[in-house]
Image (cartoon, rainbow, N blue to C red; front, side, top):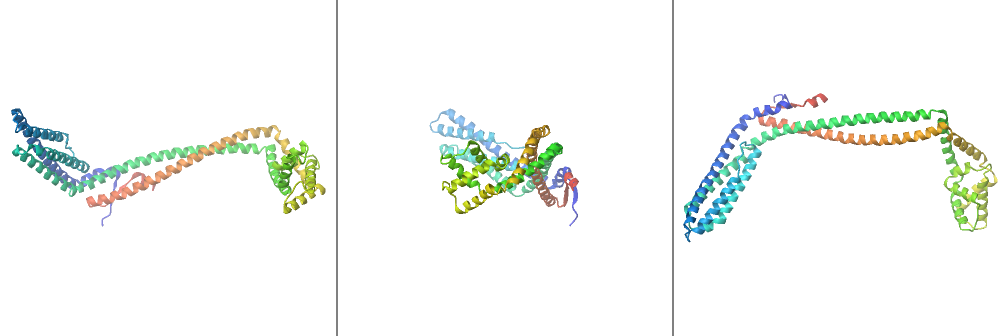
Length: 422
């Protein structure tokens, strides 16, 4: 098998037309001949229809009772036939698609004329016998001629279809390459926008870093980390008291047990924010101890009931806090750290940082959303680019095979874009 020769896409259409000219030209000539033949047969129907119309009008002018109604039927048949023929048109160019459409239209034309004949012929008989026979002969000849056209169109002319489809595939590839250019331009715009957003995000993050590098802000960050650890430790220290706290609060609200307003507020705080409640206590955390003492009394007086396992753990924790002062050093640490944080929050540097960094974070969130949207669009565009390219490659391969089958010459179509990308 000979090596395929390379041909550029923009040169392929003219080359293929020249290479297949020996196939398409004779077939198109034969098609034109057959179409002209059908056209001539239609003219034959027109001629006999016009003669029949003239004959019927002369006969109608005689007003003979025997022939008037028959002549009128002939007049209606021929007038309708001429209208149908006037609506039929023959194209100058005979492409496969044109010929297919022409055959369908001519078939409808002949069918319509045949229906009109069947509709009026019984009103014509037994008069106008010669005219009717001439009409039938012209109609039969047209049907036969159309049959020859249909046979040619269905068999030999299929080669023209193959050539036209190959030429159409060339134009399709050109259109898809233009589409690929459009996708690529949109991709470049999206990639540029993504780089711009990444730069803006980086600048915003640098602004936050500059703030965070300031001594008081840096110290606040460390204190916040310490407080997070203290919060976890505080939750462990009172984890067995949370359910008892909740039950005791319900008890105090039912008027069976009373607490001072300070104690009631502090109890609520221990339920919601145990670290803040503990860190804001006075030395030796008297409010917590008062609450625990009142809880212990309520348990001993059987006014507050707990499950045995929960009761034991709660009593152990209450005993540890009330009578062994196990939280003293932890309380000092919490209070000191909490006050340090409060002091730092009131500094001008931190206040400025919190205000401006909040706005920066809002801006960052917006920028990241925009970047995600751009990334989504880029993903869609990349998929569209990949699918379009795959379609082009597939169509190119099919076109190379079709061109070889039509011309007997193996070819390799050069797509400038793809060669460059390789």
